[in-house]
Image (cartoon, rainbow, N blue to C red):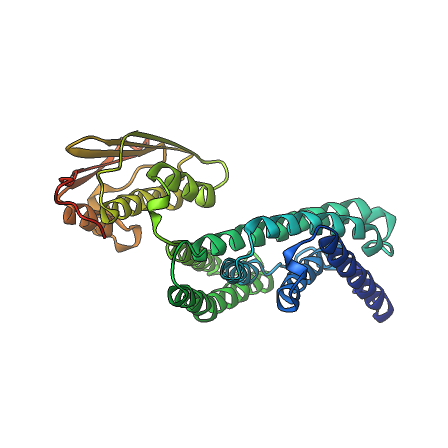
Length: 365
């Protein structure tokens, strides 16, 4: 383990960080970025850059078991993305800024590592580059979710302000508590070591917190402007892109037109399929999932299959945690039927069908 930097070394590191921030601002101005035209916007941008640089400094000089605070960083970025949308700053500006910042930080790494022993340079450089990628990537993904959710698409200023208030509430009341709880659990794990009893329960609580965080992200994503601008297939692909675990493939096949569906039916069907995917991600250990949706003139049929360990059908319908009850209630409310089949321990098949609304009586929401 490396020694903690001395006061003079810490001062030198701070000078490198300040120089990198100045270079970042200069590069943004050279690119005519909107992020440096307003003092408030730049202050937010600078804060993000300093946090990312701090993550890299910890990766270089900190102990190997030091933990980055990813959850709270993502919540802050989620809220920041929402503000960018309401400030009418295009998302491409933030993406371009992230690219510029990546180059600036990479250029600063040699100076940040100047005092390290030669035998640890390569390992610490690898840690720093990996941390830089994760730190920027997680913030950009969260910011884009917030941006998309709060992008004003023909809505009036009052509804825009209301969405901004909801973003703050989600961040302040939920995000901070989740981040603090997760951080406390992670630190407890480090202090307790691997032999202490109860660590399995800690892992369960951590998984629940991560799942709640994912739910909040989806909730914010659901605040976006009217979804009629996004077709059903694209909406599913967008969700899969955000949620799919590494090593899992999801194949989507959609046949027919959704034009006859009301906005209510469109949303309810999407939510049921999303819950099917969430169950497969969290409970089945599936590596391959297939969604087949057929929109006929009279009936909509959907099949979701996975190659996981298979659901216990005898108890699944009564277990609130897996969302099966809400799925069945949504389908029943639309006059449909949902069934769940265990494929002999080789996966799960969920099927449902609903009658397609009469175009003459469907109306809109």
